[in-house]
Image (cartoon, rainbow, N blue to C red; front, side, top):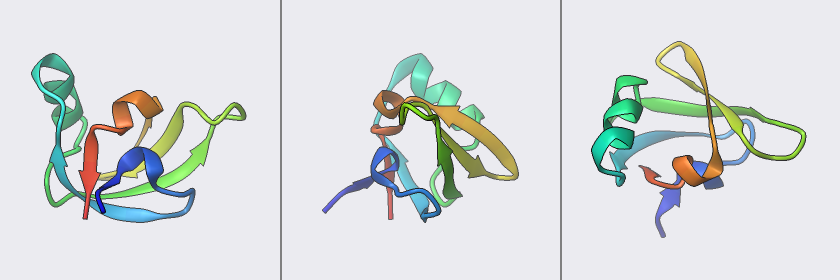
Length: 74
């Protein structure tokens, strides 16, 4: 089963295995630290559930579920 960042529960953590997106979105996510081997933790969600805040490489990044769904975890 493929675990993606958008399915990570609040308080859960995982290791980035790959970014499935291409082009500018892939480049931006990689610049933000979503690179293979990086540990990422889901901190909390907005009251509506989207976006969600993730801790990665010492920074807190908010991502929409539609974008987080392209990041695979181990």
